[in-house]
Length: 164
Image: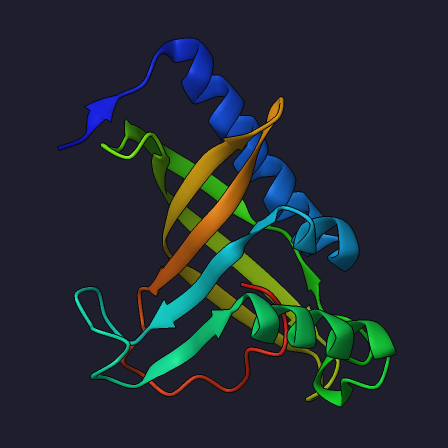
């Protein structure tokens, strides 16, 4: 059973999500990685309701795999991201809940334009819904899960060499 959160807590959670998006957009990968808990799961299923142990996913990274992905992006040799794509996330329609275990669930819609010169000035639009599980960590929060539900999740995607 979930309960909604106070206005002050909702504002703090929204601020955290906005900061997480900005760090990813600006390629501040070490700071972005520091937001994740040790039990982190970063998941991009094909469709909502999928079971990652039974169906294929675009991404299903645990904390160790996420760290590897960050190291690859930071080498400067991730050729699908040379130069790094220009992008800016727009996040809206937030919903905030307190879970029975004391963690918070935050859901929000996103719109992410990505510009890359890799394939003759390619401009892509990514959109969908984020579903986070967060917990308090000192005066801040940490991410336990981030599920990205793409609007076109069942379609082939050209690359996800960046953080969506």
